[in-house]
Image (cartoon, rainbow, N blue to C red):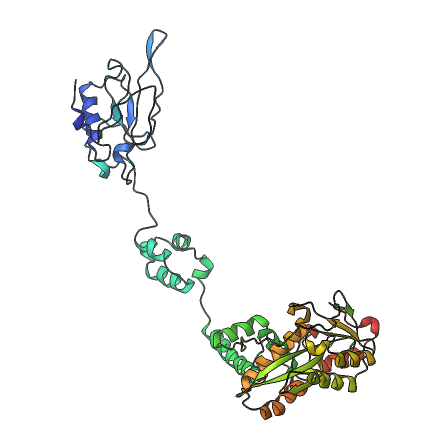
Length: 453
């Protein structure tokens, strides 16, 4: 029995299955012929051409011919050469075994054995990839029809509405919830319209209260807004405040600008940093100072300030059109007028104004210890940088000073009345510096809070 190889098929279109069926019919149903899986013939994956080699081995066992177990071996169509056996291939044909023709009489094609499936019998219609085994049902796919649609929905409300509208097609609520990832409790949830209206009214009232606070303090975020509301007798959760501010776009104002004001290229003496790993337990133990600029229409105005590190209060300041040593001396004299400072650490950067002989002499006469930041390291004086950030975000950029007189009239009011007496500071428990100093004076030295540097 010799059949043309060109009629064996390629293993993809169903010809191989018909070829094997004709072989089985020609053999008369002889059980000695082994099975070859038809998975390769029914494969529909692109480039998934598989070749099986089935070998019939005859063993003498108790005087009978024994058929050994057959294991189909998957081999790719390219790139595998075996030096021990040479197999000649033709395009579109299955792989041929290298056993003698006497042992390789015929091959019977059967489908993979499994529950509800039978072997291929003579006369069974073979139609290629569309053929389905007897007794095998189609997979109840969730990727078709309404199941595919529900998986693409976003919010819980959309899924809930779609399940109600297509419940008959989806089968059951539990199955639809499983496919969509929606909890059954979320499906049966019913919103309370009365509660939603009441919540919307409360959010509107809270929005108005937040806006009144931000009119006075435009740089306040939700944390300071919450503390300010508490001081005004209004209880509100921080998460609720953040949600309302995000919903209505009530964000603090932010600005980005930088101009270098420190000139450390000088031959004057510099001093080490004395603030590292210090513990402060009272006011007037450490002062920090720095210079910043304020842009006006025609030029710049410069501000020198001194901050008490323990209470965050501005104890001295000075405004000038020139960035010189006299600007810093004026701020230092103002701080020394009202506060005893003997033994206090005076910290600054390495600018030429703070390293000048006149400034160092005044510090030594008043008994202050001199401390300076490392070169090019603004983090050593981060407390003053934070104060100047607040000053510009909440005052300078909002008022948009045009002339020098605007700065002289407006800036002292912000420093003395707003920053020192009204603005809440997170580092000292969300209270103004003046109030913090008054509270600390009432405590015993052992009970006072400790500031670790």
